[in-house]
Image 1 (spheres, one colour):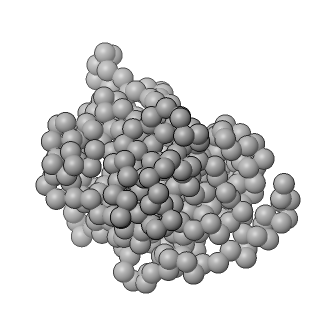
Image 2 (cartoon, rainbow, N blue to C red):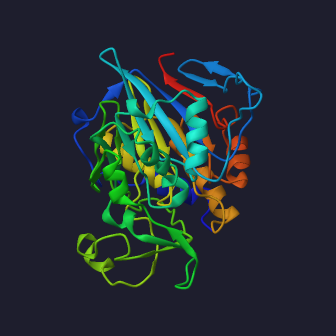
Amino acid sequence: MLTRRSLLAALAALPLTTGARSKASLPTIDSVELTVVADGTVVGGFGTAFATDGFAVKPPSRLASYRDTFKAEWGYSVLARAQVGGADRRVLVDFGYSPEIFANNARLLGIDTATIDAMVLSHGHRDHYGGLEALVASRSIRHGTPIYVGGEEIFCERLRGTVPDAPAFGRIDRAAVERAGANWLVSNEPQPLAGIGFTTGAIPFVSPERPKVPTMMVPGQGCALERLPEDRRLPEPRVDDAQHELGTAFAIRGRGLVVIGSCSHRGIINTVRQAQAVSGEQRIFAIVGGFHLVAPQTEAQALETVDLMKALDPAWVVPGHCSGESFIAAATAAMPGRVHRAPVGTKLVFGKI
Protein backbone atom coordinates (compact mmCIF):
# COMPACT_ATOMS: atom_id res chain seq x y z
CA MET A 1 0.00 0.00 0.00
CA LEU A 2 1.18 3.51 -0.72
CA THR A 3 2.20 5.49 2.33
CA ARG A 4 0.52 8.75 3.25
CA ARG A 5 3.68 10.65 2.35
CA SER A 6 3.91 9.04 -1.08
CA LEU A 7 0.23 9.68 -1.72
CA LEU A 8 0.56 13.37 -0.97
CA ALA A 9 3.70 13.60 -3.09
CA ALA A 10 1.88 11.88 -5.94
CA LEU A 11 -1.04 14.28 -5.69
CA ALA A 12 1.23 17.31 -5.78
CA ALA A 13 2.83 16.00 -8.97
CA LEU A 14 -0.41 15.25 -10.84
CA PRO A 15 -0.64 16.88 -14.27
CA LEU A 16 -3.28 19.46 -15.08
CA THR A 17 -3.01 19.46 -18.84
CA THR A 18 -5.32 16.65 -19.97
CA GLY A 19 -8.61 17.90 -21.37
CA ALA A 20 -7.74 21.55 -20.72
CA ARG A 21 -10.22 24.06 -22.11
CA SER A 22 -10.37 27.84 -22.06
CA LYS A 23 -11.73 28.95 -18.70
CA ALA A 24 -13.44 31.85 -20.43
CA SER A 25 -15.73 29.42 -22.30
CA LEU A 26 -17.12 27.91 -19.08
CA PRO A 27 -19.64 29.65 -16.82
CA THR A 28 -18.95 31.09 -13.37
CA ILE A 29 -21.95 31.61 -11.09
CA ASP A 30 -22.64 33.21 -7.71
CA SER A 31 -24.22 30.11 -6.17
CA VAL A 32 -25.74 26.73 -6.90
CA GLU A 33 -28.42 24.79 -5.05
CA LEU A 34 -28.22 21.00 -5.24
CA THR A 35 -31.27 18.92 -4.28
CA VAL A 36 -30.79 15.20 -3.65
CA VAL A 37 -33.58 13.44 -5.56
CA ALA A 38 -32.37 9.85 -5.21
CA ASP A 39 -29.93 8.20 -2.80
CA GLY A 40 -29.80 5.41 -0.26
CA THR A 41 -30.95 7.20 2.92
CA VAL A 42 -33.96 9.21 4.08
CA VAL A 43 -34.62 11.09 7.33
CA GLY A 44 -38.15 12.40 6.84
CA GLY A 45 -38.55 15.87 8.34
CA PHE A 46 -36.13 15.38 11.20
CA GLY A 47 -32.83 16.43 9.66
CA THR A 48 -30.62 19.14 11.11
CA ALA A 49 -30.10 22.41 9.29
CA PHE A 50 -26.60 23.86 9.03
CA ALA A 51 -25.39 27.18 7.65
CA THR A 52 -22.12 29.04 7.55
CA ASP A 53 -20.39 31.46 5.20
CA GLY A 54 -21.07 30.26 1.67
CA PHE A 55 -22.61 26.89 2.56
CA ALA A 56 -25.98 25.73 3.85
CA VAL A 57 -27.58 22.33 4.40
CA LYS A 58 -31.39 22.40 4.36
CA PRO A 59 -33.07 19.15 5.40
CA PRO A 60 -36.29 18.15 3.67
CA SER A 61 -39.44 19.81 4.94
CA ARG A 62 -42.01 17.72 6.76
CA LEU A 63 -44.52 16.55 4.21
CA ALA A 64 -48.13 17.70 4.32
CA SER A 65 -49.57 14.18 4.54
CA TYR A 66 -48.37 11.41 6.82
CA ARG A 67 -49.21 9.02 3.98
CA ASP A 68 -46.38 10.47 1.91
CA THR A 69 -42.70 9.73 2.38
CA PHE A 70 -39.47 10.12 0.50
CA LYS A 71 -38.11 6.78 -0.64
CA ALA A 72 -34.51 5.61 -0.68
CA GLU A 73 -32.72 3.00 -2.77
CA TRP A 74 -29.33 2.23 -4.25
CA GLY A 75 -28.79 4.93 -6.86
CA TYR A 76 -28.17 8.64 -7.27
CA SER A 77 -29.81 11.73 -8.71
CA VAL A 78 -29.34 15.42 -7.96
CA LEU A 79 -30.98 18.55 -9.37
CA ALA A 80 -28.79 21.65 -9.71
CA ARG A 81 -30.42 25.08 -9.78
CA ALA A 82 -28.78 28.46 -10.31
CA GLN A 83 -29.63 31.96 -11.47
CA VAL A 84 -28.20 33.44 -14.65
CA GLY A 85 -29.24 36.93 -15.68
CA GLY A 86 -32.27 36.77 -13.41
CA ALA A 87 -33.47 33.48 -14.92
CA ASP A 88 -33.61 30.10 -13.21
CA ARG A 89 -31.56 27.36 -14.85
CA ARG A 90 -31.89 23.71 -13.90
CA VAL A 91 -29.61 20.76 -14.64
CA LEU A 92 -30.57 17.21 -13.64
CA VAL A 93 -27.60 14.92 -12.98
CA ASP A 94 -28.57 11.22 -13.12
CA PHE A 95 -31.96 9.68 -12.34
CA GLY A 96 -31.58 6.98 -9.66
CA TYR A 97 -32.55 3.32 -10.07
CA SER A 98 -36.34 3.02 -10.16
CA PRO A 99 -38.73 5.17 -12.18
CA GLU A 100 -41.33 4.82 -9.40
CA ILE A 101 -39.00 6.16 -6.73
CA PHE A 102 -37.66 8.96 -8.91
CA ALA A 103 -41.23 10.02 -9.73
CA ASN A 104 -42.29 9.84 -6.06
CA ASN A 105 -39.38 11.92 -4.77
CA ALA A 106 -39.58 14.46 -7.60
CA ARG A 107 -43.28 14.95 -6.89
CA LEU A 108 -42.73 15.48 -3.17
CA LEU A 109 -39.94 17.93 -3.91
CA GLY A 110 -42.15 19.89 -6.31
CA ILE A 111 -39.79 19.29 -9.25
CA ASP A 112 -41.37 20.04 -12.61
CA THR A 113 -39.23 18.04 -15.02
CA ALA A 114 -40.58 20.07 -17.95
CA THR A 115 -38.57 23.04 -16.63
CA ILE A 116 -35.21 21.22 -16.77
CA ASP A 117 -32.78 22.91 -19.15
CA ALA A 118 -30.19 20.13 -19.46
CA MET A 119 -29.53 16.62 -18.18
CA VAL A 120 -26.35 14.66 -17.56
CA LEU A 121 -26.17 10.88 -17.44
CA SER A 122 -22.83 10.10 -15.86
CA HIS A 123 -22.51 6.46 -17.01
CA GLY A 124 -24.42 3.40 -18.16
CA HIS A 125 -25.43 1.69 -14.90
CA ARG A 126 -29.12 1.30 -14.09
CA ASP A 127 -28.79 2.83 -10.62
CA HIS A 128 -28.10 6.10 -12.46
CA TYR A 129 -30.34 5.89 -15.54
CA GLY A 130 -33.34 3.81 -14.36
CA GLY A 131 -35.40 6.78 -13.17
CA LEU A 132 -35.16 8.31 -16.65
CA GLU A 133 -37.93 5.87 -17.58
CA ALA A 134 -40.32 7.96 -15.44
CA LEU A 135 -39.69 11.01 -17.61
CA VAL A 136 -40.11 8.91 -20.74
CA ALA A 137 -43.41 7.42 -19.54
CA SER A 138 -44.85 10.78 -18.48
CA ARG A 139 -43.59 12.61 -21.59
CA SER A 140 -42.51 15.37 -19.22
CA ILE A 141 -39.25 16.26 -20.99
CA ARG A 142 -39.31 19.59 -22.80
CA HIS A 143 -38.73 18.95 -26.50
CA GLY A 144 -35.08 19.25 -27.45
CA THR A 145 -33.72 19.12 -23.90
CA PRO A 146 -30.09 17.99 -24.17
CA ILE A 147 -28.91 14.93 -22.28
CA TYR A 148 -25.12 14.77 -22.13
CA VAL A 149 -23.30 11.43 -22.15
CA GLY A 150 -19.61 10.62 -22.47
CA GLY A 151 -19.49 8.00 -25.20
CA GLU A 152 -21.33 5.41 -27.28
CA GLU A 153 -20.50 2.65 -24.81
CA ILE A 154 -22.99 4.11 -22.33
CA PHE A 155 -25.71 2.49 -24.44
CA CYS A 156 -24.20 -1.03 -24.37
CA GLU A 157 -25.95 -3.84 -22.51
CA ARG A 158 -24.48 -4.39 -19.02
CA LEU A 159 -23.96 -7.56 -16.99
CA ARG A 160 -23.88 -7.62 -13.19
CA GLY A 161 -20.50 -9.19 -12.60
CA THR A 162 -17.15 -9.64 -14.30
CA VAL A 163 -17.68 -13.05 -15.94
CA PRO A 164 -19.39 -13.56 -19.33
CA ASP A 165 -22.32 -15.55 -17.86
CA ALA A 166 -23.13 -12.86 -15.27
CA PRO A 167 -26.83 -11.87 -15.01
CA ALA A 168 -28.19 -8.99 -17.05
CA PHE A 169 -28.05 -5.41 -15.74
CA GLY A 170 -30.08 -3.83 -18.54
CA ARG A 171 -29.44 -1.09 -21.07
CA ILE A 172 -30.79 2.34 -21.91
CA ASP A 173 -33.69 2.55 -24.37
CA ARG A 174 -32.13 5.38 -26.35
CA ALA A 175 -34.92 5.52 -28.94
CA ALA A 176 -37.63 5.86 -26.27
CA VAL A 177 -35.74 8.75 -24.67
CA GLU A 178 -35.51 10.47 -28.05
CA ARG A 179 -39.23 9.97 -28.69
CA ALA A 180 -39.95 11.53 -25.30
CA GLY A 181 -38.23 14.74 -26.47
CA ALA A 182 -34.63 14.52 -25.25
CA ASN A 183 -31.66 15.12 -27.51
CA TRP A 184 -28.65 12.86 -26.86
CA LEU A 185 -25.35 14.75 -26.98
CA VAL A 186 -22.53 12.21 -27.04
CA SER A 187 -19.06 13.64 -26.41
CA ASN A 188 -15.94 12.81 -24.42
CA GLU A 189 -15.01 16.50 -24.49
CA PRO A 190 -16.01 18.95 -21.71
CA GLN A 191 -19.38 20.62 -22.37
CA PRO A 192 -21.01 23.72 -20.81
CA LEU A 193 -24.36 23.04 -19.11
CA ALA A 194 -27.23 25.53 -19.46
CA GLY A 195 -24.95 28.45 -18.64
CA ILE A 196 -24.36 27.29 -15.06
CA GLY A 197 -21.93 24.35 -15.08
CA PHE A 198 -19.94 21.94 -17.21
CA THR A 199 -19.15 18.29 -17.74
CA THR A 200 -15.59 17.11 -17.22
CA GLY A 201 -15.34 15.17 -20.44
CA ALA A 202 -13.31 11.95 -20.32
CA ILE A 203 -11.56 11.43 -16.99
CA PRO A 204 -7.96 10.21 -17.29
CA PHE A 205 -6.14 8.23 -14.60
CA VAL A 206 -3.76 10.82 -13.16
CA SER A 207 -3.92 9.85 -9.47
CA PRO A 208 -3.03 6.50 -7.83
CA GLU A 209 -6.74 5.56 -7.98
CA ARG A 210 -7.63 2.56 -10.14
CA PRO A 211 -11.18 1.58 -9.13
CA LYS A 212 -12.54 -1.80 -10.15
CA VAL A 213 -15.93 -1.68 -11.88
CA PRO A 214 -18.09 -4.71 -10.99
CA THR A 215 -19.87 -4.95 -14.36
CA MET A 216 -19.29 -5.99 -17.96
CA MET A 217 -20.44 -4.31 -21.16
CA VAL A 218 -21.55 -6.16 -24.28
CA PRO A 219 -20.43 -4.26 -27.41
CA GLY A 220 -23.04 -4.27 -30.17
CA GLN A 221 -25.96 -4.90 -27.80
CA GLY A 222 -27.78 -1.56 -27.58
CA CYS A 223 -24.74 0.34 -28.84
CA ALA A 224 -23.33 0.68 -32.36
CA LEU A 225 -20.04 -1.17 -32.81
CA GLU A 226 -18.80 1.30 -35.43
CA ARG A 227 -19.22 4.20 -32.99
CA LEU A 228 -17.14 2.57 -30.26
CA PRO A 229 -13.37 3.10 -29.94
CA GLU A 230 -11.54 0.65 -32.20
CA ASP A 231 -10.24 -1.44 -29.30
CA ARG A 232 -13.86 -2.09 -28.13
CA ARG A 233 -15.49 -3.31 -31.31
CA LEU A 234 -15.30 -7.05 -30.73
CA PRO A 235 -18.88 -8.19 -29.96
CA GLU A 236 -17.84 -10.02 -26.80
CA PRO A 237 -18.46 -9.08 -23.16
CA ARG A 238 -15.61 -7.10 -21.61
CA VAL A 239 -15.07 -5.86 -18.07
CA ASP A 240 -16.11 -2.23 -17.69
CA ASP A 241 -13.54 0.50 -17.09
CA ALA A 242 -16.11 3.34 -17.25
CA GLN A 243 -14.07 5.12 -19.91
CA HIS A 244 -17.23 7.03 -20.88
CA GLU A 245 -18.02 8.31 -17.36
CA LEU A 246 -18.52 12.04 -16.81
CA GLY A 247 -18.24 14.26 -13.76
CA THR A 248 -20.25 17.48 -13.40
CA ALA A 249 -18.92 20.73 -11.94
CA PHE A 250 -19.90 24.30 -11.11
CA ALA A 251 -17.49 27.21 -10.71
CA ILE A 252 -18.59 29.43 -7.81
CA ARG A 253 -17.35 32.99 -8.06
CA GLY A 254 -14.65 33.74 -5.49
CA ARG A 255 -14.77 30.26 -3.93
CA GLY A 256 -13.83 27.57 -6.44
CA LEU A 257 -15.35 24.40 -7.85
CA VAL A 258 -18.25 22.27 -6.68
CA VAL A 259 -17.58 18.85 -8.24
CA ILE A 260 -20.14 16.04 -8.45
CA GLY A 261 -18.76 12.54 -8.86
CA SER A 262 -22.00 10.64 -9.33
CA CYS A 263 -20.34 7.24 -8.87
CA SER A 264 -16.64 7.95 -9.52
CA HIS A 265 -15.76 4.71 -11.27
CA ARG A 266 -12.81 6.64 -12.70
CA GLY A 267 -11.83 7.78 -9.19
CA ILE A 268 -13.15 10.83 -7.36
CA ILE A 269 -9.69 12.43 -7.19
CA ASN A 270 -9.23 11.89 -10.93
CA THR A 271 -12.67 13.46 -11.45
CA VAL A 272 -11.76 16.54 -9.41
CA ARG A 273 -8.40 16.91 -11.12
CA GLN A 274 -10.09 16.77 -14.52
CA ALA A 275 -12.55 19.50 -13.45
CA GLN A 276 -9.56 21.62 -12.41
CA ALA A 277 -7.83 21.00 -15.73
CA VAL A 278 -10.93 21.84 -17.74
CA SER A 279 -11.77 25.04 -15.85
CA GLY A 280 -8.34 26.34 -14.89
CA GLU A 281 -9.73 26.78 -11.35
CA GLN A 282 -7.64 25.09 -8.66
CA ARG A 283 -9.69 25.89 -5.55
CA ILE A 284 -12.09 23.15 -4.51
CA PHE A 285 -15.14 24.46 -2.69
CA ALA A 286 -16.97 21.13 -2.42
CA ILE A 287 -16.81 17.50 -3.51
CA VAL A 288 -20.24 15.85 -3.70
CA GLY A 289 -21.73 12.52 -4.66
CA GLY A 290 -20.80 8.84 -4.80
CA PHE A 291 -17.08 8.07 -4.51
CA HIS A 292 -17.20 4.32 -5.33
CA LEU A 293 -15.39 3.15 -2.21
CA VAL A 294 -17.57 0.13 -1.51
CA ALA A 295 -16.75 -3.44 -2.58
CA PRO A 296 -14.88 -4.45 -4.67
CA GLN A 297 -12.79 -1.50 -3.44
CA THR A 298 -10.94 -2.18 -0.19
CA GLU A 299 -10.71 -0.27 3.07
CA ALA A 300 -7.07 0.50 2.19
CA GLN A 301 -8.25 2.20 -1.01
CA ALA A 302 -10.79 4.21 0.96
CA LEU A 303 -8.09 5.43 3.36
CA GLU A 304 -5.78 6.33 0.47
CA THR A 305 -8.56 8.37 -1.08
CA VAL A 306 -9.12 10.20 2.20
CA ASP A 307 -5.47 11.28 2.22
CA LEU A 308 -5.61 12.37 -1.41
CA MET A 309 -8.82 14.29 -0.83
CA LYS A 310 -7.51 16.00 2.27
CA ALA A 311 -4.53 17.21 0.25
CA LEU A 312 -6.94 18.82 -2.24
CA ASP A 313 -8.19 20.88 0.74
CA PRO A 314 -11.91 21.08 -0.14
CA ALA A 315 -13.96 23.41 2.02
CA TRP A 316 -16.78 20.83 2.13
CA VAL A 317 -17.28 17.13 1.38
CA VAL A 318 -20.77 15.65 0.91
CA PRO A 319 -20.50 11.88 0.35
CA GLY A 320 -23.47 9.80 -0.69
CA HIS A 321 -24.56 6.73 -2.67
CA CYS A 322 -21.51 4.43 -3.10
CA SER A 323 -18.98 6.35 -0.96
CA GLY A 324 -18.87 3.65 1.72
CA GLU A 325 -18.87 3.86 5.50
CA SER A 326 -15.12 3.24 5.78
CA PHE A 327 -14.42 6.33 3.68
CA ILE A 328 -17.04 8.46 5.43
CA ALA A 329 -15.78 7.59 8.91
CA ALA A 330 -12.14 8.20 7.98
CA ALA A 331 -12.92 11.44 6.10
CA THR A 332 -14.95 12.76 9.03
CA ALA A 333 -12.00 12.15 11.35
CA ALA A 334 -9.43 13.57 8.91
CA MET A 335 -11.46 16.66 7.96
CA PRO A 336 -13.48 17.46 11.08
CA GLY A 337 -16.44 19.77 10.55
CA ARG A 338 -16.17 19.60 6.77
CA VAL A 339 -18.00 16.33 6.00
CA HIS A 340 -21.80 16.40 5.79
CA ARG A 341 -24.38 13.73 4.89
CA ALA A 342 -27.26 14.58 2.52
CA PRO A 343 -30.23 12.17 2.60
CA VAL A 344 -32.96 12.28 -0.05
CA GLY A 345 -34.70 15.66 -0.15
CA THR A 346 -31.75 17.61 1.28
CA LYS A 347 -30.89 20.92 -0.37
CA LEU A 348 -27.25 22.04 -0.42
CA VAL A 349 -26.48 25.66 -1.20
CA PHE A 350 -22.94 26.62 -2.21
CA GLY A 351 -21.97 30.26 -2.62
CA LYS A 352 -24.20 33.29 -2.07
CA ILE A 353 -26.97 32.33 0.34
